[in-house]
View 1 (tube, rainbow, N blue to C red):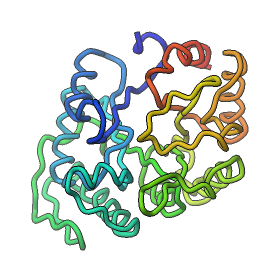
View 2 (cartoon, rainbow, N blue to C red; view 1 turned 180 degrees about the vertical axis):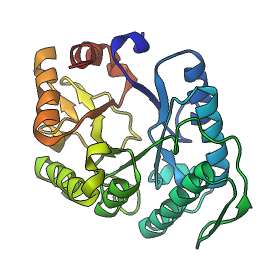
View 3 (cartoon, rainbow, N blue to C red; view 1 turned 60 degrees about the horizontal axis):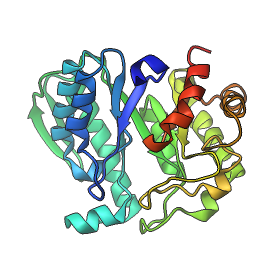
Length: 279
């Protein structure tokens, strides 16, 4: 159904808490059940996997899916995941530093026959990682986040950006000072400025967190949709109203990559996708 309705990518999340499939086998199962639909992650927590392991797993999926992988990755933010799994939840600066190194390792292992890297967090010694991805130079990379440092990193390194509300340093809740229309537009402007000549090749978007009056967001979500009503993260009204709102953000602000956050809203979102597909 998804493949015929206008969707382009099927994303899977990456959390220990809650009844959800692990992302790597989940992506592979989705790829096996489809022929056109791209498969990806929204988004992997970098701290859960060493980049050398992830590079090989991602390349394998890209090969087996014939080049349909879209890898989303972030620093990791959900403190509950870390605590319940016995992982150290480092300060944001340390997690960001690790992610920055991880991206270099991923791209190096995907593109170089023998790759070495000497960083603060990762060390790679002439590793020959095979298979190489089908997509060249590497699979599409998505970075999700809301802080200025993350958005600048995404503008420099990613193929797609998912704009989000910045989470507090302790991972407990969204930062209320980062919500609202002004903050959302500021993120877009920051990305456009930081991307420079890369802008034309960069997909910029966000997740649709709520459709209609009733929110179905799970308690683990970082979304704070109340102040986001004027942004494309919240779609109210008729199908036409929702379509017009997304077209406005595409035409006026250059957003072209909208992701449905919750599959429970699929029936509400399907007619929107069908109207927008190809338009």
